[in-house]
Length: 295
Ligand code: NCD
Image (cartoon, rainbow, N blue to C red; front, side, top):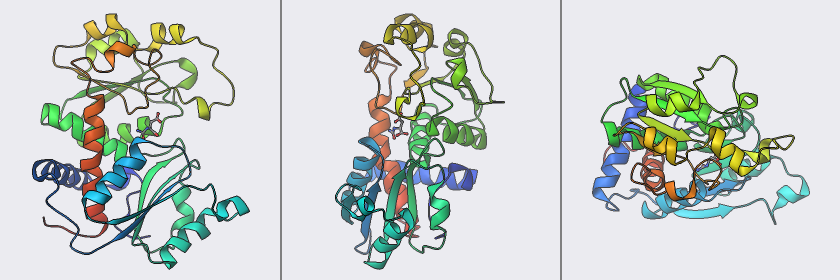
């Protein structure tokens, strides 16, 4: 595996995470000025649906002057049964310098260890989502200037969420505190849980997660209203948040389920800021993938 791949957040040290966040902030300051010194070919291989991750990677790649190819399995040899390994190995063989991959299998990248080009993980099943995690960390860092002692409540479908898993790892590495909340059937063993009404009062960062219906084996049977009342962000809980606390969600948001629709763009919400930060973080991760240290 290429050493500049990004597969799991836990593969990075605190120092490496902070370097990526600092680079992302520089990209925020210099806007589109820095470009890759050499023309690079990058393929975005999305085997699962995506809007933000896919197109913010594409935006970052284009802004950096890379040549970008977007792959979806429809209409390719994947439909003839070609394996992930053979597909990605093909992209390496035909001249691509790096690939971004999203796939429904947890840790799909384990079968790609012999490849030489950097692999940037755009999400593996319910496993990892390192670039989402980094953009979340950037959003928190911009707000509070530190992670030490920052209290993060992650609320929702914890069991099926790769965002929950990656963010737990990162917050622990960076020195913050994290608790979880949400329906009992979607808890992960041994993770710290708090009642939602306590959690929203306790937290500096309230992070709501999407109900991952596509990963459930059976319907959960709760109506949208029931979910919102029991586990969602409504007016009452929003008012109970600390004055300087922020509201986050990786999106797509099921409006009226995880968050009352009018609160998606409320003053404490950083949901669209997270998306803009996604481009900055992905630029930093691509710069790192090709081993460029300086601007
Ligand atoms: C997340 C994902 O795909 O894991 N979305 C994203 O990347 N912005 C969260 C989700 O789909 O719920």
